[in-house]
Image (tube, one colour):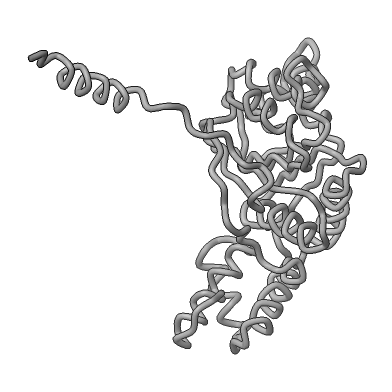
Length: 274
């Protein structure tokens, strides 16, 4: 009797576990959003506040919503750079705009790229180019370290129509704390030969985006307006004096800080926030 067959089968099973078959291609028409980590994972629902609750950023909101709606309907649309203060709703606005466009019947999905998967964007673009759907590819909190020349050059290529540029049905949306995206130091302004050269080169990347929108820290009035909107939406009592003290203890006024205070109020009231 040949005893080698069971042994060979066990060896084949072990090799399969070590090198599993590649995952099945993503169904890019099946979900409202996806996360890309080198492979795609479908997301069942986009978590985003109603657009009406995003206050203090009215001009930015109008521009982003209009641009996403154009993309959703296959019209000419811009790549977007949303830059500026933390917690002022940059990523929330992008998610909310896509959700709004989907509710209006737009053929669009959001694809958020994991921070360690940016280098695999060409593989993502290859898949999306074959998809009969418009896609907003979202890079959240993007930044390049000092001395990283390859990352900015690659991003410029994607935006400017290089060999691996994003396909026509895809637009990029990037959020960053800096307009220039790349780290910049004040010493660059002191260059005795040409004090603007380095700064202009850094800003050249930002200029590749057809839409660049700055988000700035809240005024006190904007902060309170955000809180009033949330409090009315969730039926919570608002103590504006305490809300201002809350922001002072956190050293900032922003939409995120306002939401944290609303979460505190809901918790005290034994409520959940949907």
